[in-house]
Image (cartoon, rainbow, N blue to C red):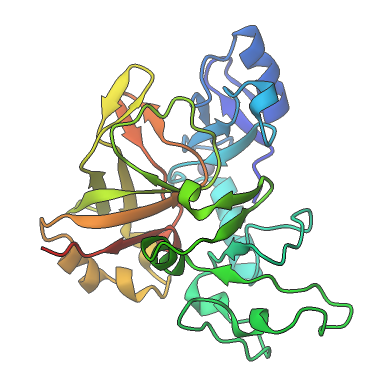
Length: 294
Ligand SMILES: [Zn+2]
């Protein structure tokens, strides 16, 4: 669900991203991180993506992205949940404005329970490519052609196998798989654009009261802050996800104090707030890991 307005902390008003752009230019809004969910009784953090990016370097105009948990009584979160349950395809990140491309893979972020289109007989092959997508295009008379897709897990395999693959991102076009994957390795990420990237590196899963925090081994630098970036997976996000790799007993085993090679897909770049660097994890389909051979 697109967030039309967000609460701008610096001016204490709910405004559109376009208005935020003007305020940022004037200096009355100081940072793309100074936004919150406009919902009642909610202070979920919001990033105004690309706000700090020079206009000539933007592939996409600034837009709001919620990058944290909504409060328990947030009315907006209720609407979003309702929308998600109501439509099978609402979690598809692509829209009609994304051009059909023969030679690029799209990200498949549908939860497994909804992944198989009804009655199409499409099966996810070993390589994660939908069966129907392999068929010659043009046979579906008048219907939109289906572009090949890859789940995060399948993309990770391709990356580790050094396959040369082009990935199509929503709204911003294609990217080489080697540019999509971004190793967390001490860089300054101040110039990094807000777009889908797979942040990866050695990291630990730590059990917390209501979820798991994942801490990378290496630092990132953002502004004045140099820190090991973290992400968080709340238990209730796992509930009905159908993800075997992140059911509760699997997670108990993963949080065993041994580092894993973690891969985290995120639409916005790392966020710095109160001295911490955080990368937002939208849900279990955005996170995967591989065991490290000793
Ligand atoms: Zn909210």
